[in-house]
Image (spheres, rainbow, N blue to C red):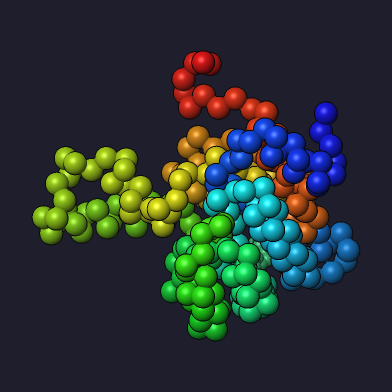
Length: 250
Ligand code: FPP
């Protein structure tokens, strides 16, 4: 039976022992959450920041090693300018407000994506927290910002092509490991568990290569209502599944 209590779920997670090393999350539903309250969309994103805090704390408590959050996609640049401005300033605010605590909790923050498109202020804030927390090793928090999986794959192909053209790599030796090594996630294991909130059932151009064998957990909960209890529920669900990686049961 599933408990609905965070402490019970955490105890069950610990008894089982096999915690997903890497959890990836598509944080969806901020806009609908705001609309339900007749509030503007940025209000939903602001409320979504609380859930970011919840899942970071929950991931540390459960012993997850890598947490990847899809904070802003390259496609999101097509949203109305007011919403983009709001998201950029929320990112700055999140970093400014949480940096010291993230550091104290042993979280290493990294930003992955086409970061050159960020506003100078957002970019400086992100750089600061990345540098401040670079030596931590309890949890790696990957913030995917201005990210598109297809663009990441094209970038990896281009990097390999440049190296091949310069004679630094033999095309015949290019294998999955060489390709993975040119992705933003070069030094991360692939996600074991992908969570998407708000009832949508899409990958939306997130980590297309890395999610090849991830278990999917689709939650109907809108992102601002996603708490550590929801995260622990997803991890418990993961623990009860059998992963086969294309093989037959043992
Ligand atoms: C999707 O909801 C969410 C986003 C596009 C942004 C996610 C950002 C945050 C949770 C806040 C800041 C994050 C960090 C890491 C500081 P949506 O707007 O697509 O919702 P809808 O589908 O209901 O419209």
